[in-house]
Image: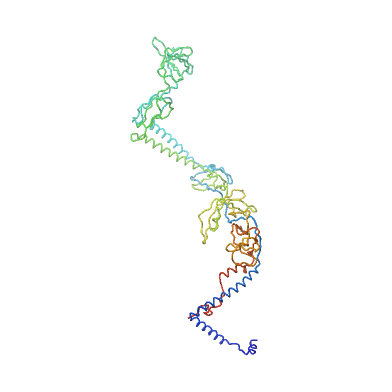
Length: 565
């Protein structure tokens, strides 16, 4: 057909050599023009004008295509939005303890079984401690002896209960061993030893009542016979008598200078006698030393064994220091032996449930062996790892929804108790461990795998739109008749629509909260994620901004390079 056309027009189709020659002629012409600096400027401007014309034509074509794009329109609405973060982990008990032993020996008692609930200090095992018990008894005897030796060396003690009749030393005095430092009298009871006619006294008995009459005041007190002599004594005038000892309570004013007579069974004593204290003992220092303190005032009451005088342990009283050292050594030995004894009784360190029991009564256990394991199941815990981009949204106290494959159809609730700042980096991504506490139910067990949703934010009445409707720059496409269209931002939009700028809040997988920029009554337009976005308006705008014209070749030839000199 080209041949017929050539015959009619009188033209011939140029051959390949002719075309190539013409092409090189054009190129040479362009090179010559390029070498001219004045003409070079106009060549550049011409090329730019051609490129801009091409872009304008493409833009028009794209806009026409965009207008034809099918958008999904949806009105704004108020709904509940819950923003969550997901994770998973394994449940662990609140606390676990492996019970071990510090001693070896035969197990005498193990009165518990797997599954039993125990409390803190419940006795789990008792080991044979007969050897230690013997050592404990010896340690106690040594301690008692050391205590007595120390008290004897460091103090002058009252041998009986009574009243300090006299003090013979003062603080700061140097005392020699055996020196009297005080006198203690037991004046609660007085004794009267008087003679009776031998024949009368032979009929008296211990415990018999007696009347004691005080000389001068003639006051009569009731007493009791405590002893009757079996031997006769001859007094002046050939009087044959026997001595009878009578005890009488001291009402408070009797002393060893008071004389009295007695009557027993209507028989009077042959003579009067002076009342005596029940006990009057001199207190002496068992070792020499310096008096550091007087512990009781003269006339004050003391009990048997009470310290009256305290001696300091200095260079002059080596005995006190030695006794003190011995006492301390005995106390330490006693404490060590008691601790060893306690180690043969193994108790539960926590409240919980026994999940394993390795040894039973009659077994022999070696030191350091695990004997049983106890779980504290008062609550459960799990660790979930949160990505570094989301961890700032997680706070202590937030609620966590939990589901477990082992307990289908049920949701449990947990609470975040700890957000660790010690992250772990893997393949350039850092995650942070978050601890979740689960308090409810017995259906969840340690070791179960659990899926967790952390509720980081929630709005019960949020103005919202589909998440996919928010485009880059926080812009949303609305219909031209929407109330918010009056606030349209500058920029091209499809016919019948306008772009408005919004401020967003929380979002879930489907919807996002709009804090400002839209209002109730607006209708938004968007391309759902499942639809093709090849011809979307946003895609067209991105291509325009990127400025990617087709490579049509430059003045330098097919390689696209500039003119060659």
